[in-house]
Length: 106
Image (cartoon, rainbow, N blue to C red; front, side, top):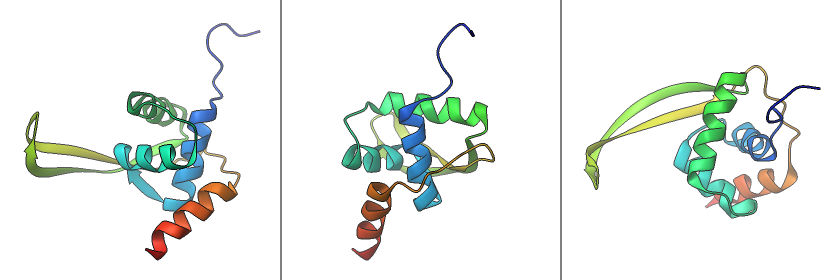
């Protein structure tokens, strides 16, 4: 038996489901969708799983944009957009599909 944490994660699988329907999104956008559908999770946890999923090939960086604005940390924010990677295995979760479809109609 392998030592350490198991590779499989329910949170990461839920993020896979979200990206399966929205195609690409940045971390905070994924967090907002996640908390609307699934049990409460921290933003930090979402970013951890995006990083880990990228290492495992479940996600890939689609693009990186720098956005100007007035933020508490300065005048620029970096948005890293993620998409599904080759190792992602979405199961077409109905809750996620219904939520994304209802948001697209608005």
